[in-house]
Length: 292
Length: 276
Image (cartoon, rainbow over all chains, first blue to last red; front, top):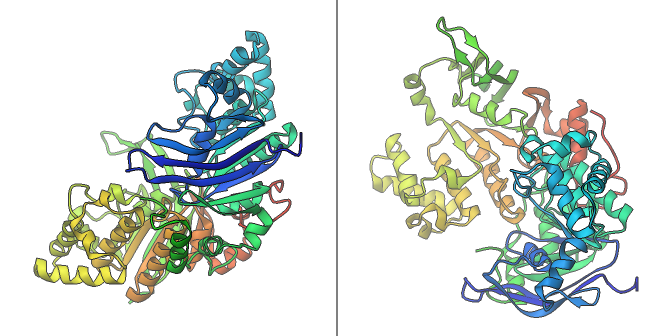
């Protein structure tokens, strides 16, 4: 059982209904093993968030899946009745959202938001859920859990809110956590703490994580494997060491060269050459484009 | 001609201060606590810090977009700390600003043509619309912007094009000093490199001075000669980029650098905790 992937996406294809059927995902296949962190990386419009949304059953109405399967263990998330899907999402698959500002209900205290799932999906009493919530906040290194439970989201800093959301994501012991650019809105020193926390939690609980990001540096430091997308197509996939240190595709190499880095004064000044975009267009199709 | 184009000494900025009947300042929230900074002719200076460090306020104070409550600012040898708006106006053309979000800084109801032509006429850099357009055509070629953009409204351009228009708008006025505040933050890596190149080229070819504000030390390294590192409204360290990035002296600078994930396999990075 442990050799079988936890999640396997096979030939997932999706189009935009609004944009005259423009392709959003083109025959995307990827696997996530139990307990590993997979980076889903690409520039805007690459389709990385669409994949995450498809997994969680929250695709916007304007995006239509036209082919492929999303097998979670042995169940195809795309064909399950919505009641069964709701059982899986939250219980077995959880989300760490991008923006800790908007993901929490501003009108409810943290305690109510953190204990909903424990009470409804785990049948805990108010008291049990309260105790579990404190333990969870301690696990994400919140020093004063009682104060945080009583707080409203606006009373917490961005980093604190993100910790609360990580606690919430891991609260039901899911098998898979989807982290959708969870550190993009944070300062760099806070980002490092949050990355360390996510890696620590997934290690401890043996959870698999899909980490959506546009930052190759973040990928290098937190992911085991990486899948790079461009215009809805998988361009390169492999271990972080292979993809980042021995990139096979010219686009991967060009992205690395275009990324500024503080340890190299000449980095970040080489735009992705037109020849690379031309190559992508030949491989993917004439309608390939990073973003409209 | 003095070597320094812009000098600020001991500047403080307080937001929300009220003035009592006798003109006594009261209350308010001090966000800059005595900052010294100087920018030489032709150099690009980075100002880096996390949110709340005061980097944006410092930039705004240098341009006199916010008033300082203490300290002095000199531009091209002239004390501009307290001069009235009317006296500031002739200097405005020489001090330009490029913003983070070009959508917010370009009038959405005007065509790009109008956005670019009007300031040229206003500042009398062009005698008529026709000569203004000649200048615009030249800069469009250099910035690799298609002329068709001229007829469009800002929202019809891509993010990278919009940011290049924002830079073109500033460059057309032939300023001596440009303040660039988080100009590549919203851009993808592949577009970002284009814009950074353009900024670098501009400062070199026009010999202008630039203050480049960013939260991203890697971006600063790519374009700046010197860097000021800010925290809680003060400068904690400044110096040549080559020195600050290779041998940072301040603990906070070291912590900031250490927090940046680099795209290389670095076992132990995640668990390394920097002491501040």
